[in-house]
Length: 143
Image: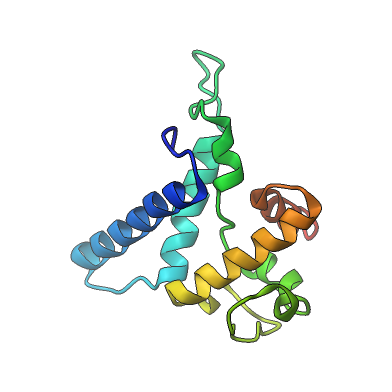
């Protein structure tokens, strides 16, 4: 994460981690892990590592603080619901309508995932906030 200087560089690493998790999941369990669920797990881990402070050194584990703006939203029902009525204004690609009961399973393909991430980035760019703050907001507003 520390070496990521651009969104594209970070995305390549993230997609590698998602691919590796899906492969390991299949090899160890024989079951398939869809893209959206694997991405959510990787994104939660990446978010927590980027936001964690080493108790011994009292410094962030990830010293490249620019990484925070590259973090992806770990999609679930809380982060998808607020997008339902505005997604068609934000998404460049044709995207499946978001059902009212959407969960991380809704984000089943890499294409769908990328379209959603782009939409959230577009929204957050207008607000001048990092996309991960959208995730924090969407969780906090219901808890």
